[in-house]
Amino acid sequence: MRFDTLDARLGARVSGVDLNRITDDGFREIHDNFLRYGLLSFPAQSLSLDGQVAFSRRFGDLDIHLLTQYNHPQYPEIFVLSNIVVDGKPIGIADGGSYWHSDLAFQKNPAMATMLNAQEIPEGAGDTLFVNMYQAWDDLGAEWQERLLPMQAIHRYRAFEKKAERGTQVNLTEGQKAKTPDVVHPVVRTHPETGRKALFVHPGMTAEIVGLSAQESEDILEMLFAHCTNPRYVVPYRWKKGDVIIWDNRCTMHSATTRELPPEKRRLIYRTTIRGDVPH
Ligand code: SIN
Image 1 (tube, rainbow, N blue to C red):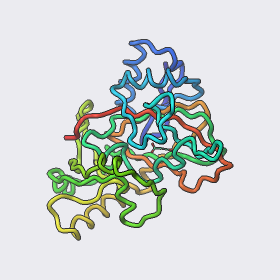
Image 2 (image 1 turned 45 degrees about the vertical axis):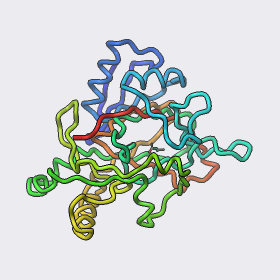
Image 3 (image 1 turned 180 degrees about the vertical axis):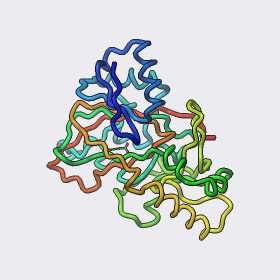
């Protein structure tokens, strides 16, 4: 197996492996590099759905997405990202998240990792954007770091929609709403495996900082959001059919760019989400 840097800020491209046939030693090497690079891309794979579920399970337990209408009918662990409509019925969620977020940060146990397996990719569209949140934290400067360290923030499912920012509206059922109460996480988390600190606030999900006035909370969050979405941190991932990527949600955030993707630009990606621990 070979690991080549994808971008100096984040990620490595992995060659010399067939993800349908991973050995225990191979997995250890992948896992070490997942921690080192924060995102791994495996180009030109033909990873089956059974293979994706099995490979994902090596990282940990899998989440069943609460928007069950978009889960694969035969594989509930697979959340279908797609703008394809068959017989008038969408086969997946057309826009899985064109806003900055870390997967499942609206839950007590946010996702540890997310794996995407690209089946159909439109030419020149539908990139996924990433930010390395270790780097965003490291660059904040000692004064801000000291101030932010004790802070906690409220995370809310699709918080940005309440601020009237445009986005794909997802109408949750009462049952789904009941599964998404507000949760509180530290503003900076310590990665449980690398021990490094990473900023853990995300424009699409972090609603307010606990214990501050509304104005002070908004001022700090706006400053942090402007900081971590600065173009100097944004790493676009340009998809190719057959790509499988996995990223570490504990030290990255991401945004899809599928909000305006026209239906003729067909995109189909299978997602699995690996559960994580409570951030500290
Ligand atoms: C996601 O946020 O999980 C989806 C990313 C994408 O569709 O590009």
